[in-house]
Length: 602
Image 1 (cartoon, rainbow, N blue to C red):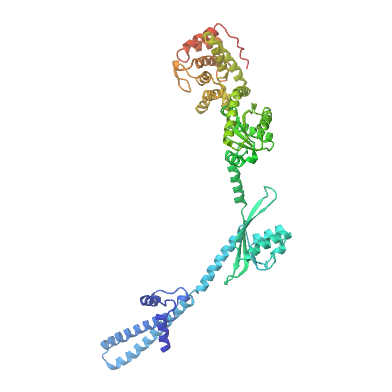
Image 2: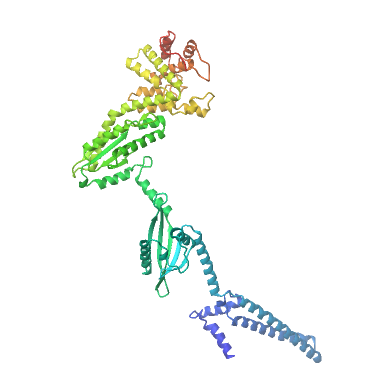
């Protein structure tokens, strides 16, 4: 009895789990198992279910004795009957309480036997974690992992590492195998030994290795080596994680290339050039020559043929400059249509010779019949006190002077190339352009314009449809009715033509005439909806000549009119569609057959 009391007191007051806690918490901890069942064996107190059964038994016994005796005395006053009933009552009580104690004890024992051990739970969780971790290491094709003891022998490895050793060295590894004996080249084995020894010394580090002789086959792997220590902090081995970082490494190389290169031409970009200029601007590199080049007529080409053609010209120009410079200096794309060469230890005379070689090569270079023409400027820094920026500025000034002298000729060449391309695409347009130009010249003379204006109108009439170079051939040659969207596209050709001519000629009248040649006297034309005197005179002349030639020429969508019928159509449009003064001059030319234009034969 004394021992049991000691146990109870130890449970209540001296539990190691609650030692040092306030009395109220100890009392709460003691009575908690009476109402909440333990989940783990470490939380199970054997005295608790015994006390629960004892207390319940005591409570039932007291209630039974008091209540049953009172009831019997009231119901059975006869003494003999009372003795007999008391015997029966005692037997019932003993039987009932025995069954209760059996049921309750077995219930508590079954619960106790089913409790989980804290260690078992921890081991189960560790096993699950290890299973998941092993599955990750085994399933990833980009992770190799192995561990070694101090004798360089395998203590573990994943299948990816095992396969790699077999593929590279032709050896199949196993637990206990010496990793250094798997390596074929002695120098490679010594390198590995030095890395492993660093880890055995307690160092945590990583190294990156590169494999593959070609760019396509090149791969990068990063090794992370860590020492394995026992509880006394003694190194007993190492573990090595090897990650495939090829995608990351190539992405870094790509980003580096993009940051310093122009993606269109493949040359260095301005950012790189500015860094090179700073690094090159040293006394030992004197003289330093700077060459700047600007592509002539690029905007005109973009407007007429599209940016894909302009890009092709830039790439051709870049190729010619790179090849002609023969690896000398740094070639870069300095601006949207500018190139730069930085030539250390190069005199101005040598730089001029290089530019002459480049221009000679460019003279033989074309893109779709369009010549690749570049204006260059050269300047040289010869003394240390001079700023390299002033040399760049001087080269730019020389380039601009060359551009003024060369670009006009180049623009005219491009205009001819545009008209040639347009006429090649649609031979009918060539005959139409010639006839309209000739008729404009005749009308201009009847209007008593100056000879300069007559020549300009002749040229304006010839190039009035130059903007059609940017219109899809399918629309221009269509023999069916076009949709409203297609007509809107065709109606853009005056604006395109105007942009082309504005970048090519210094004469505003020519571009304005092309822009407005579809305007009508009553304001029903396009693109601006001008009317009356708002329409430039040159545009009014082209409008009449263009309409007349369209009426008398072959068209799939309507019948051909005779000269007289077409003249009458023009006369009827005087004051509504056409300038009355221009119509009068036109009628004097046409009705008197005062023009020498070849008849339509296309």
